Length: 118
Length: 119
Image: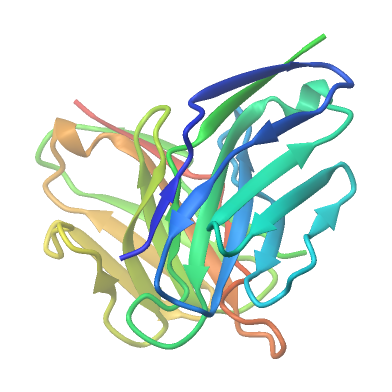
């Protein structure tokens, strides 16, 4: 079974500064995706960024980037130039993309509540 | 594009009654839809996977007879909570994966969620 662990229940950062959220995962699979989702107070899940396991290059999306360490099974999210609108709960998630009973299922971490202060 | 809606957004019901929650993909067809449950300030837990035209696949520990899932078309899946009890009160979220060629199941779009309160 796959597990995703987020060890930081809460984080805070000043506006315009940089913050890194941690995530580790455990799997014996080789074909998978990793995701970071954001859930603001509206509770709508929003995809922030995703990484394909076979790609060595770290994914980036504007102010969001990841540090994907496959051997260490680590997938951290860096948010640069933090904005007030980044305040949300952030979930790291894992998905197997090969066949089998777990195909397409998202396994989420416990979440990290990020607060951006003005 | 890629909008998923849920109806209702909020529902309050009496213990023992059944409640149906709809999940619709508004501008794409979805081969697969997923249903999650989320308690306050907790993570999303997958309840079941719904494939159009076939029976849903439930996760371990999820009661099939209590949480009835139907995926009758490529744009609609429903979750019915039968004989609801206060412990079923939660936030229910669906996601949908498009049929479009070139996109795999890694592309999923989430609905806004339904808050269920059972009195």
